Image: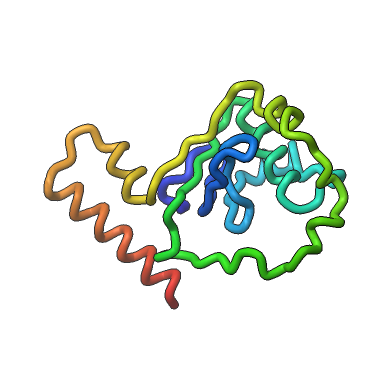
Length: 145
């Protein structure tokens, strides 16, 4: 993920709609200066704090990008925390409030990291495709060690 990160936020995992499309917070890469500047809103526990953070980063003009398919790199055992989030502080946010945080801005979503890299190459040739495959193999090897 670090190879394709742009200043802002990159994440494995995307929540489609409900009420806005946003990156999931289970594997999140945030530039330290942006995190220190915006931080997580402690009045929202669980996912709304991550959602609000990414809206603030987008509104500041930075990138927020999420990779939908990532199970070959990282598997998220979602839902293992049970129903505790139901009683968490700040979970009573209404959808219109969340939509308002984004002020009409949207995150960038990609199917996979390879999809992202291929979109960045204007005229792919055999060598560049080979480099993409090689870089992906290295990432997979590093994650499996």
